[in-house]
Length: 318
Image (cartoon, rainbow, N blue to C red):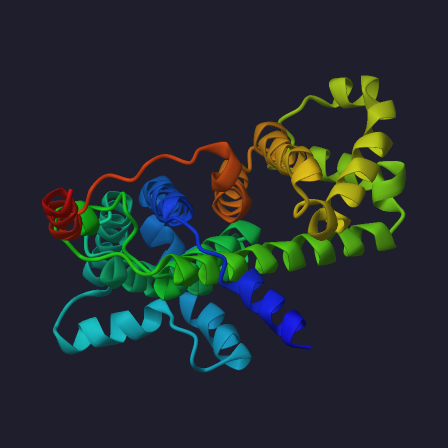
């Protein structure tokens, strides 16, 4: 029993560098930045209340409140802005600007903890108030932002570390947070693959066919799909097997690179063939942060201001 307990502790608290956190911070920051910029022209139409919007925001937020009255939503901010004599349009543009600014600060690594919380709340408000127009990308971006909220920030490549001189957290704490992210990703892929395996559509290729011909994801011409139709069942089976067995083969070093590369290739293919670029990007970011850095790109971290006393002490001893 003590050996089992020690092994479990070593598994959870394996020392890690902060490179995985740098990948997550910069990647999710860019994800939110591209999301915000891409919606600029439709921002008011997407979130405005009443007849000005595509769908009444108050109706959507009423449905969200049924799910949970504690979920943040844009209506709260509009109501708060009204008390300050701000119009709905002004509040919505302030929300857009705040999300854009928070994403830029995340990419730079400036005031990491504060801006990660702000970005998470603002993105959650936006995604939940416009939920009918969202898909999996919103949920996975929220997951990535949540991990940044609870992560042991700052990382070694952030401005907070090398300019503001904020000390880094222990490597064991880095290992714990990365391990939780890894386990979470494994659970997501396992149940996604299990759900696909339960239906015949992924085994005979019809699910892939329907996904590729459904507007607005029908980027590949139908005549090409017809000529390559014999590959759809093979691709569907590969997706099922790869996702369902992800938690098994992503851990051993001998098979990790195969499954890691296969999953990244899967999401690149989704982005190119269906135009789901943001979804592909966020899944690649989460995978690289969870399982990539230790064998893909382990760089020496830049020196932080807090390292200077240690360096001076070592020199004096030498």
